[in-house]
Image 1 (tube, rainbow, N blue to C red):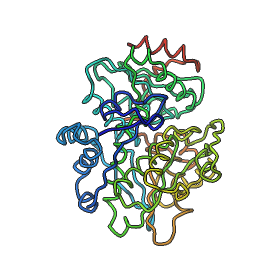
Image 2: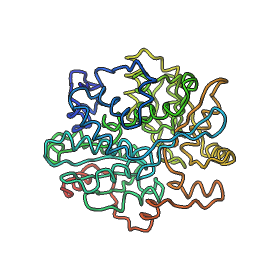
Image 3: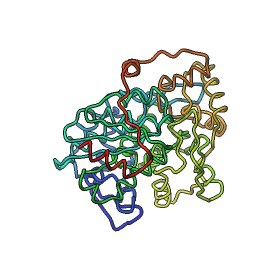
Length: 426
């Protein structure tokens, strides 16, 4: 499998190189040079989750890794289900929070950890990643205790939920967490600066576990196939999927699933008040505004990193961006949707509720709707309890980490200060 740098097309790398590097020259994202297409989708969907995912990922990776090895990586990574639950007639929730850190990032984080171990050349590796909430926990738990891999996770101080913070800032060992005085975009900018410093990259073996890493993105494709496998063929023919979107990796993966042959009629890009993409789709002007804090903090991103991949895919497939559904939802509207779902007997948190609201508004008669639930409601206990007047019980992983001491250090939004940290943790 060859991948090319979207910004500098002459830079072409193997899957292993892309996993090890994370980013290409000039902070360019890697993209597959060839997208296979599955003809017999019904037969593929009849397979079990791991077998099907192995076939999907093997088709993308090519002969670089044998199918048996890909199967072993997938089997080790996907040890939990991705069930759909009916919310009402014709509308389903895809629950992506049954992994160890109760969020969809577990799929990508664990597959990346397995992939990196498989393609590593034996040298020391420093994983540097930014998180707006859920990536941090998934990456931390996926890499925890792995030899010769240090993980440094940057997050915006005071701008993620307390339980999100506890889940990945209490581990220690090879996991180092840093609370940055700034928003998620500031954290992401620091990561990009580090990747632009060639000497630093080589000195510490720098890699990223954000959804800019192609292995994480590829893993996410698999749960779209898994969701479709749980619907009838008739439902699949008119399937509309609403995706809560922050850094836009999830929507990119969904569009890639469609490119591989999964019959998805259309997507809805659902954002909160950080609405750079919906405004761009409306006006054709890319005009990010300062990031604002919301109750759906994992989507508090005003300059989404994965958007260039979506534009590249739409260019290749000759899909018009105007066919993409879109919308921005306020905190008040999100709370209304949490209540509406609760009245239907479904407990949801703000990110999933945003996707549900826009799905409800845009779903046409005869269509089947699916919205992604990206995190367990208990990860946003304070917000959900406040909206519903409830007292959500903490599942095991959260209860365990909630009682543990935070091990993070605070840091100014300063690249020189970050370099000191990166060198110290070696």
